[in-house]
Length: 316
Ligand SMILES: Cc1cc2nc3c(=O)[nH]c(=O)nc-3n(C[C@H](O)[C@H](O)[C@H](O)COP(=O)(O)OP(=O)(O)OC[C@H]3O[C@@H](n4cnc5c(N)ncnc54)[C@H](O)[C@@H]3O)c2cc1C
Image (cartoon, rainbow, N blue to C red; front, side):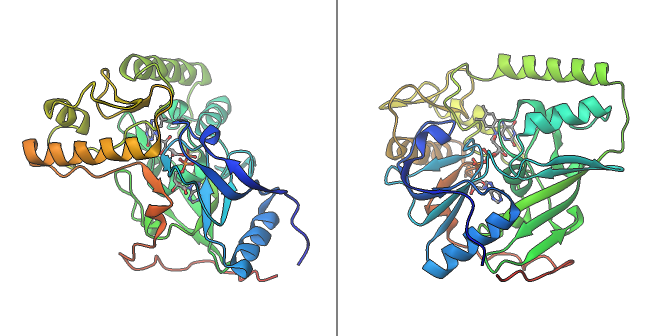
């Protein structure tokens, strides 16, 4: 096997790599130089028996105060390809969603505007079918490529991924790394009109959301029916509730803010209190959207693996 191009850092603080600015260090962290490097790093983790974690922009994770064991692959600055191939835009997993929105706008294609205000990467967004303003990635996604821990490259079309509100079958396979996605360029529009629409959406978002950027966005998914999570939390009396420096936003109760030195233990305690109180007062079980690392990474089983379309073992 060729040698790994990226350096592996030891004991690297992860808090600065998350929007919440919370969490302990990674035992080892690497930024893959390219897709071949991804294979080499996955293979190394397997040989050494290291648990494996993926991190994009860290805008939807709560990393434990003890940090992460094993090897963390940080993707926000890797897999940055973005190329047009006919009617498709082929995009690396590390590309930021606002960059994807801008690229589609410049090419004169609508349908991507809602991504301009979501601070995550393509890989994590695909896994969760990220969305906003009534739209989601399902509306523009054409193909997803993932690499499994056994170094298989799999390719899925959206129909195979069971995309729903903040969900996809990929959530059942947390050790599969999304490496690339293709998006359909099917709805031409005037780039100026698209830019104006994006600006309007961003302004509306700024008015709705707290000014403090140290959040993970919505902590809970909205229930499939009935009032939104934020309303339920407000009704349960939790708007403005504080535990240490972790504060339930006054502006949007589904956001928890880090007002300074909040730690993961405090945020987790606040999250469980909210879940318990919303259940007791409103009879609704709120489901977390934010991912707890490392604990949520235990494979959940669940639905059967989506069928394999294009394979290709790559063992080197
Ligand atoms: C201010 C704010 C506003 C937000 N608004 C929205 C919104 O409107 N709509 C919305 O849907 N979300 C929103 N979010 C949440 C978040 O931005 C999205 O969920 C985003 O897709 C997360 O991307 P990330 O790169 O930050 O993922 P991370 O937080 O780094 O990771 C999230 C999960 O994905 C996994 N992961 C990361 N990269 C990969 C990969 N390549 N392959 C497989 N798994 C991977 C991680 O292991 C982790 O389990 C918001 C967040 C913030 C802070």
